[in-house]
Amino acid sequence: MKKSLQKLFTGASLAFATISLAQPTLTATGMNPVVGDHFNNYNAGYVSPGTSGVNQTWNLAAMGTGTVSAYTGTTVASTPYAATYAAANIALASTAASQYIYYNTSSTAVKIEGIAVNSGTTTVEFVYSNPEDLLHFPFAYTNTYTDPWQATFSTGGSQYLRTGNTTVTADGYGTVTTPAGTFSNAMRVHFVEVYKDSTNITGFGPYVLHYTNDEYMWYLNNNHYPIASVSTLSTTSSFTNATTQSGTYLTGVVAGIENPSAFISAVNLFPNPASGSTNLTITLTESKAVKITLVNILGAEVGKTIAAEGIQGDNNYKLDISNLSEGIYFAQISLDGTLASTQKMIISK
Image (tube, rainbow, N blue to C red; front, side, top):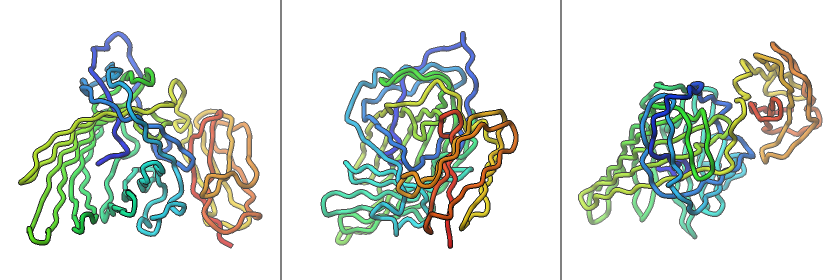
C-alpha cells in the first residue's frame, strides 16, 4: 500500500522439513488495529523474500537496523482530518512524521480509507472513494482475492486521480527471523498493487505515472501490524523509469502465546446504542479468565472493570453505563490477560 505503514521485511528461505508447524489463520481480532496500539516500525534494507509454501524458514536478519517510525492507534475523532474520513473507525497516527492513516475495520476485512501527510504548511490528503482492502478475514494459506480501488489527492497545484488493483495472497507460513527475534507460526502475504496517477498539468497536458508495488509481508495474530516486510516499487512514465527496494521490521512483537481470539466463537453487545445499561455475551470454546474494560475514544478507562472466570459456552455480563455521557466507547475483552476483542459501543440518552 504506498505504504508508509506496511513496509516490513523478510529474507532468504531455507528448507524446513524436520518440524511441522500449525497452520496459522489471520483473524479480525488478531489483526485489526485498536485504540491504544503502539508500533515501532524500523525502516531497513531490502533482502530477498525467499520461498513460498508450508513450514518455511525465512532468515531476514541481514536486513540490518534503520530509522524508526512510531505509530499509535487512536480514534478518528481525535485527529485533525476526521471530517474527511467519515467511513473510518480507527486511525494510526505518526506524530513525528505528521502522518495519519485511516482504516475501516470489521469482522471480515480491514480497509484503508485514506492517508493525510502534513509537511510544514502543506497537507496532502489521499481520499479513497473506493477503499483498498488490505486483508480479508479469516485469512489462511492459499486464500487470495483481487480488489479494485480509487483515490484522489492534490499536490503541486494539480489534482490527481489514483486508480488501481491489489491482489493479496497468503502464499506461505513458517518461522521468520528479523533483527527483533525469531517468530514461529508466521503467515506470509504476497501483496501486489498495480496502479496509476493521472492528472492534467497546466501548460503541459495529460500526465500519467504508473506504479507496481510488489510486497511481501509477515503477520502474527495479536500484533495488529505486519512484523516484517520487503517491497519493490517500480515507477514508469514518459520521463521516469525507476525501481526502489526497501524493508522494515517491527519491534516489541508478541510471540509464543496462544491467539486469544481463537477462543471466542461469538460476541454480542445489546442493546447498542444503549443508555442506562447494556448486555455483553461472550461465547467461549473453552474456559478462560475474562476481563472487560470500558474505554472512551481517547483510550482512557471509564466505568467499572469486570473480571470473572469465563466458562465454555455463553457468558453473560451486564455493563452499567448510567454514569457515562453520550458518545462512542469501546468494550475491550481480554482472555487470560491478553486482549482478544474490542467492541464499539454507542451511548445515547
